[in-house]
Length: 84
Image (cartoon, rainbow, N blue to C red):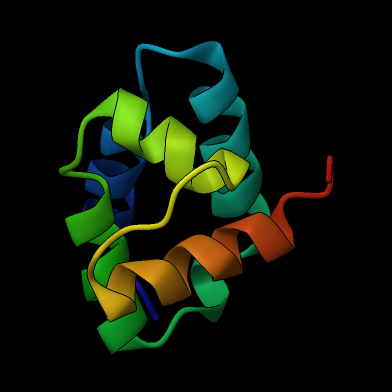
């Protein structure tokens, strides 16, 4: 289970400068965050350190991250994004 402090920090970092990213991350927070393993949670937090243009390209499927762990978490986020 994720601590309330960690959830709040993640929620804050999911607030992005692009509306599209905000919507994707908010849906993921609602539908998928609690299903992550501790390792996946660490990778998700690592993902949130990247710039919005990279995140947008990855989450829209235009590009893929170089790191395998990020590829996996991006795929999981896209799976939980019910707008696709």
